[in-house]
Structures are given as structure tokens and as C-alpha cells.
Amino acid sequence: MNMNALITGAAGFIGSNFVGLYLQKYPDSKVVVLDKMTYAANLENLSYVMDQIVFIKGCIGDKALVSKILIEHEIDFVFNFAAESHVDNSIANPSLFIETNVVATFNLLQSCLNYYKNLKDKSKFRFLHISTDEVYGNLELNDGKIFTEKTPYAPNSPYSASKAASDHIVRSFVHTYSLPCITTNCSNNYGIKQHIEKLIPKTIMSCINQEKITIYGNGNAVRDWIWVDDHCNGILIAMEKGNIGETYCFGGDCEKDVRTVVSQICKTMNEIRPLSNNAKYENLIINIQDRLGHDLRYAVSSEKSKRELGFKHSISFEDGILKLIKSTLKIN
Image (spheres, rainbow, N blue to C red):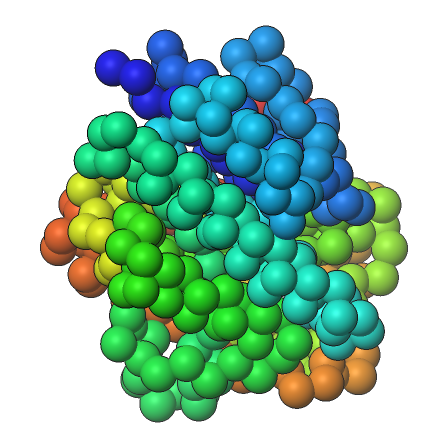
């Protein structure tokens, strides 16, 4: 079956993991990766599939380039992972996030709509827009509430605001132009190939290098953690089984505050690579000034995705951290 896919931003963390999953499921498909190759992208992430893909360096906002790719490669599915995603960077340089996550995504949608209008068989085409739980804003600690697909948007950072805007634009293209789109919103991903700026890989490398492990504020900010392969599988089944115009949330059923996450990494490192003189990696932890506008808690319900798509998790957080540390240390 012809399942040609354009996967944008796939030299990054989640996208590069998704490419492998897609090719494993559909080995005879053509996969085109379009990536602007910003600081967060790394071609090494795709080295394991480079002989199976067509790689093109470019921006999703380049309408001429995207249109050429869609037509030339007869694309059936577009998976949009391309985004600026680091909250700290969005605070320092918000204009970049508006340009990439809003304007460029709008241009990508326009290119896809023009392509879709000229397809003889429109039944197979899908546009999968990958977003974040941060568009829903902030939850109070210990109040028991959780984000769902019906939670009103209330973004609190330039990053989440730009992603919220892109979600709304995608929705408008479905309802105004009948472009067959599906949106997914996920909780905090962790796993192999994640950029060093993120909490978990940054903490692991701080342990390895025996450098200070920094925690914002008192470390009580809570996030819901999902193993990246589970999220990628969720996106794939959303493409296969999801309804056009719908949103599907993928959480990890794994709420943990930052200090607990860091402590789990330190505990695992103590077991795998103990320090001399009975020293503990926990001694490297220091607290720094809290982030501006720091949301206290995110938590995402996967119930709709479990019920309608058959979504499920494959690994516990503790086993995921162990697997990630062993991969980083290159040990079995």
C-alpha cells in the first residue's frame, strides 16, 4: 500500500524517533524528511534510517519548496513536528516562536491545502499536527484536575501561546476548507535522542560529568512524563484510526515533580555508576531562581485516546530512566 509521508522537523527528538516507527510499520513507504536544521536538530538522530529516507533541508514556511515536495513525492500523510519548543528560549526570543510555530505552520497548511485540492483521490490524505499540553495552561498542585481534549486553552508562555495559535489555525483549516487534519497534544516526552537542554538528558549529563544539577525554585513543579516511543505510537494510530477534525491527548499517566525526576536519575546513577568514597549524585543538586511565569503543574488524560484508538503505554518511568541512562552510557 502506498503510504508516502512528509515528516517535518524529523531531525529533532520526537520526529526522529517517529520516523523509525513509521518505517517499521510501513517499510515499503517513501518517507521525506523536511528540516530547517536549527540548533535542536541533529542529522545523527536520523543516521539509523538515512538510507531509507529522502532528506531535504528547508523550512516548512517555504511554500514553493513544500509544494514541490508534496507533488514530486506524491505525499499521502504530513506529520508536522517542526516547532521551536523550549520555554526558556521563547521567553528570551518570542518573535522566533511566532515566526516558526504560527507563520510557518500557516504557510505549511496553505501548501497542503493547495495540494489537497488538486488530488484526484482525496480520501487518503491526512495532516497530523503535533502539539503540546502546555496550550492548556496551568493546573494547581494537588487539586486532582487533569487536562482533556475539552479543556479551554490558556497558554502562559510565548512558546505555549504560539503552539495554541497553530492549533487554532489547524482547526480553522478543517472547518473552513475541509482539509483533513488531526491534532495531537502530548505531555512531557523523554527518551533517546532528546536535546541536552531538556531536564532529563541535562541531569543525566550533569551526573556523568559530575557537574552541578540545577533545579528551578524548590523543584515542586509537576509534569506528566511520557516515553517518546509511546507518544510516537499514539501519533501513528491517530493517523490510522483518528477522526478528521478531532484532537487526541497522549499523557504518560505519570505525574512527577522535578525534584522527584532528578532524584530518580541520581538514584539510578548511584546503582549503575557509583561515585568513589560513597559520594551520592544527589549532592550535585542546587536550587536556582525560578523561571519567569513557571507553570506549576501539567497533567494529561489519555482516556479518549485509549478508548477510541487503543492507545497504551509500554514502559514504566523507572524502567524508562534506566533504559535511557544505559543508552547514554552505551552499556547493556
